[in-house]
Amino acid sequence: MGKLRRGGYTFVWWKSDHSPKHVHVYRDGKLVVKWDLDNAKAMKGHASRRVLDLIKELVAEELL
Image (tube, rainbow, N blue to C red; front, side, top):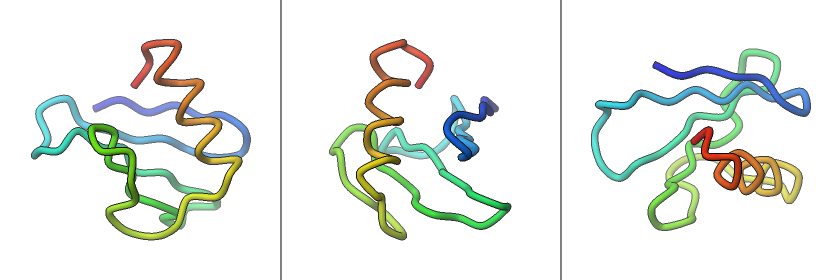
């Protein structure tokens, strides 16, 4: 399991989780979005522009 905090959000993922590759994003302990990294779309919830920017940063830094 991977977990990190950035911009007031907590990003959680599991390396051996089911496909597609995805990340769970939380704020104040509540799920904001479950984001499909392979297809760049929400699986559950809604990603704000800020969350999308943070995900892009984390992918570029090879953290996700």
